Image 1 (cartoon, one colour):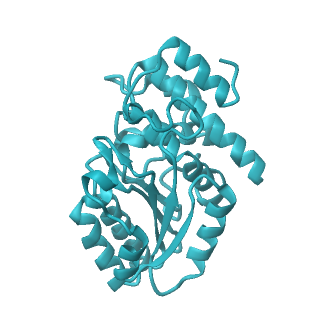
Image 2 (cartoon, helix red, strand yellow; image 1 turned 180 degrees about the vertical axis):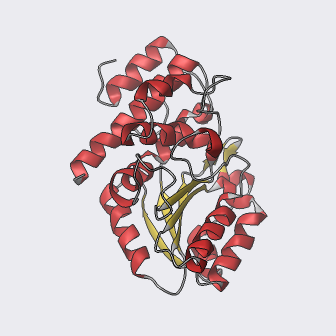
Length: 272
């Protein structure tokens, strides 16, 4: 896809999230919106994947460490052709394959079960090292939250990845400065995030996480680095795309009223 098409797809994925949360009356909308452009760039431009062969050995891997943002990941998988779009509206149903956090055995296209925060970088590192051992060329991408950086396991994995020179591993940090209980700075304070990753021996890039050209360029830079993993610090906005969600952290997990649903769809370019 061209950049303009990717930008339109990111709006579509956001609309899908609104529809899912409104219809099923559950889910995490604003954390999904802050990573929507990253997910879009990866699934519709970057990742070497084949919906007809979800278990293809040579596919690139994506680990959504901040698993509660899965509504936008499910939307991307559906729009990419892994399963019908209509199945999105079974989000969190008891018998659905689209659970409240990613459960890989149930969902085509998922590479990892996540949701218990802090595990994704370790999982991604294991995949990256497996590629080296098996002489495979696939790359591994992990998306983690900035609040999630309070989990010590992330830094153990960061240290190990640097030591192993896992250059086929790229971590996107969704730096929206919020977590469920308030701002990241108030609760834990991982800043300066970029300097911390550098101190662990990573190649570090800082970008606008809602700029698809910057995301794509950062991925190309990461691919060119051969002696260390890359962390891409993405400055994002929780709820990006819908005016009444921005700056209102209750949308971390909240359901739209009919009026809110209609306004959100309109602001995202739909016909609500």
